[in-house]
Length: 203
Ligand SMILES: N[C@@H](CCC(=O)N[C@@H](CS)C(=O)NCC(=O)O)C(=O)O
Image 1 (cartoon, protein in one colour):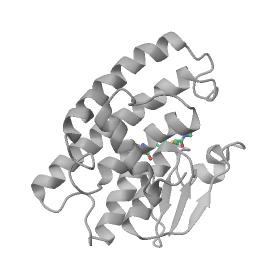
Image 2: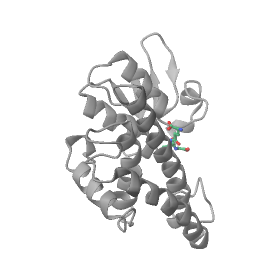
Image 3: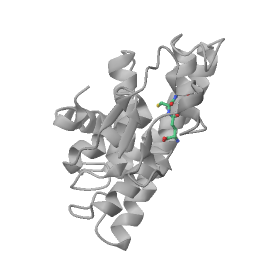
């Protein structure tokens, strides 16, 4: 198996954090983002979207989406389940995981406009657009703030793929760009700080 990744990429980190929490490891290949290796013909032959992560299995199957990679690995390693232990808990975890995936997508659109760091994505970043997009982010943060309630983790008392999906966009905003993200949501802010202390969150 080989995991193509960007060590600090928001979507790759969903897999990286999962692997660490699960206590399993797979060989990694760090794509050279600066030199656009992910856009090369060689990499696009593996993942036509030219994005990361990709997991290539020993049988040569290329899994080209972070959520699909996590679900695949979870099927190979069912011990200590991280998508929930029964139908009801899996439904809750998956709902919150998908909501978190929406948060990532909106968060990325926001960062493309709020910063000048993604000229390939947004050649004319607009702070007005960023402010508008942030309203849609806040809508999802409000939901997560309610859902986490008094739990230690987003979907309940134990870490799940919902945490591994949501955490990286908070971390990208806060640590890579020094931007507030969820700071006005007290439960999410505490969750972020607690999760940040876990070895899996090492950046
Ligand atoms: N749905 C995909 C999205 C992958 C994705 O957008 N990855 C970003 C890194 S966070 C990427 O490769 N960006 C480079 C680009 O689009 O040029 C997944 O979750 O794996």
